[in-house]
Length: 213
Ligand code: MN3
Image 1: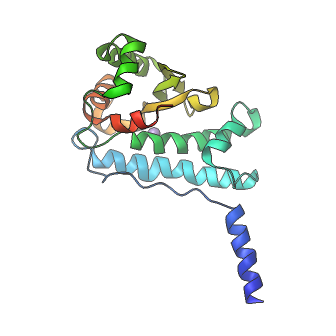
Image 2: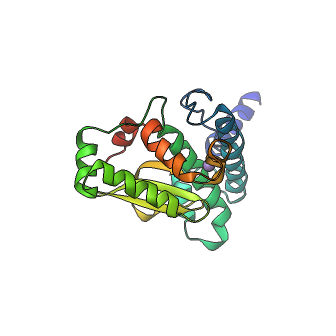
Image 3: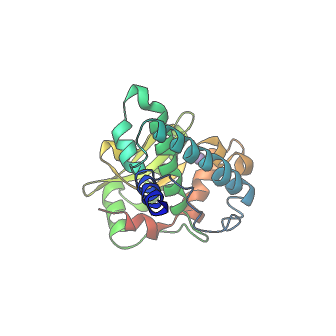
């Protein structure tokens, strides 16, 4: 009887895979002075956690708990009565990706094939930086600014709220969160300063290069 209970529980556990809040890939104070431990503590421990918790709740209600976040995003994108599920799946995915796009002593200039593609697509690395910062500044309200690959061409795109380029078949290489909660404690209304610091001091270009198709 006890074994039967065990197998039933094990079966439920495999079909019912709750998302866990992924750990930050560095300590909360590792990005100082550019992003404070206080910002990372709230952004990861409160905002990101809330998206994961809400996603788990909505996915369970919709019978989608066995899907990965990416599968859930693709299934619910553009479906009006699944907007809550899409938003929380995408925000969970986007934040996990965003943490990986930064590292202590990051920034600088990428190398190898990624730098070649940036030069070909934007006409130089400095031009890419300008396009990226302008797109982040031009995103009215909350959203994200991305470097994406479409075949062998790289593009900068911005998305509003939770939206993610994956559901438009673009491959994300790099993202910066331009919701105010990402920078307000450290930069207040100076989003341009945050975007500039992100590129010059925080970007993990090795991670971005690892995402190339
Ligand atoms: Mn955020």
